[in-house]
View (tube, helix red, strand yellow):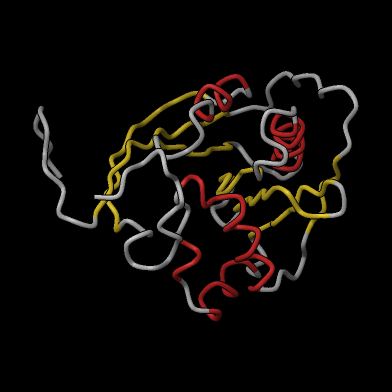
Length: 197
């Protein structure tokens, strides 16, 4: 796809964002955990689709995460129960308040597919704590590369957070997709900072 400088109009019902891909090739120096940690990280070995969708929605709706919500139960189950996928819940005060999903299906690599917290944990150090665990888990496998992508729809601090965690940017992409608020996948009130057009 060839892009030219300048602006390009999007069709009605579409949104666009810029994704940044980041990677690391060795385990970075560990950042200190925040004091007074009150969270646990639980591996969900056989996730149910209803549980997964509910947590995915709670974590991702402010950032228009919709990809997994449009899949059938069978399609979703094929992904989340694949032996190369590891899913973890960040548990706090009796409920799951964060999602960590690692993809080991490519030999010698791990992709951090989804990483996010509900509003209940944002800004409390839980992200740094969870990332320390994600890095430990990823590098406990025989990998040579750990990578992730974030985009302009994510939390404004996400890109800097990944860089501080030891990832280095290596590529940018432009994503154009249906606005999930206009096709009923997400509530029209989701991500109010991104206007509906």
